[in-house]
Image 1 (spheres, rainbow, N blue to C red):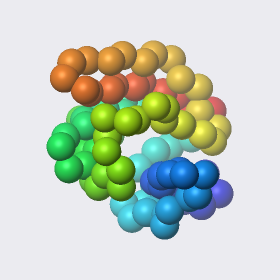
Image 2 (cartoon, rainbow, N blue to C red):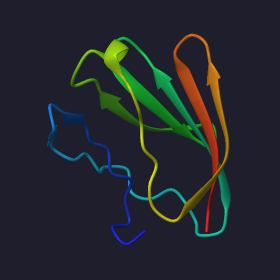
Image 3 (cartoon, rainbow, N blue to C red):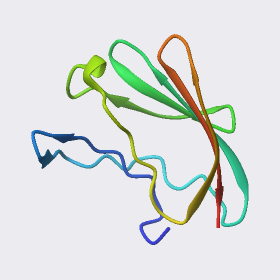
Length: 94
């Protein structure tokens, strides 16, 4: 949590794009939270604890998504994939 923000970015063709980090840091160390990422036609829409947090517009065709990464001092306790193209995660900051 050194940056005090949630960073979003894309690695396309081996190169990182421009970071997006607006929205601050809506997490507290040691507190559980629910993270929901909805994949729409034009963007990823992110809710944290059932409240809208940010939108991350697609930089490439989202149908080619091969992976996503959560990093930092977190412990993932559950990952669910819900159709259509919606990913939900529950994580714990340590």
